[in-house]
Image 1 (cartoon, rainbow, N blue to C red):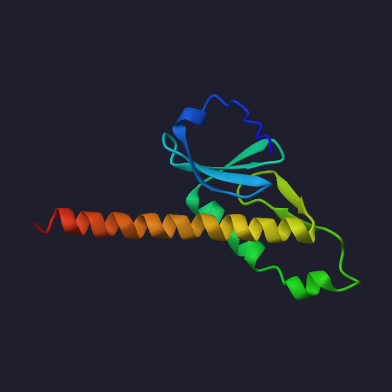
Image 2 (tube, rainbow, N blue to C red):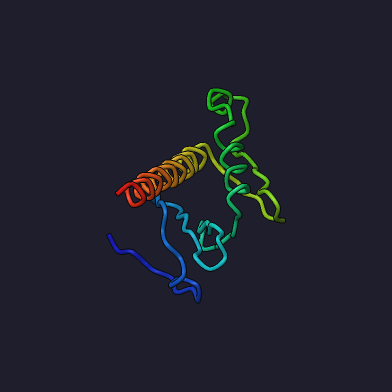
Length: 123
């Protein structure tokens, strides 16, 4: 499978946090923001905005989305910007995986940092 990489001027300052087949979340070292790359667009979030997006996506009722009377798409307004996502049920599942994976990695990194700080100062 070929991977197409798009050059962005800030790519060297970004550290990938988590990736799915359809999206990537990276952390920008210089601005302390998180960059969502989805459908060849980059959208920047502060941590609290990314958390709010995760809360919206995880809060969607999957059983309700599976109902025959349910619309084929969900429109999600992105926090603190003028953009929105138009997601199918499959996209909703992909975003859940992306956001849950991202926050799992961030939690793991935070735990590792705490352990390292505690061990460094407990000699």
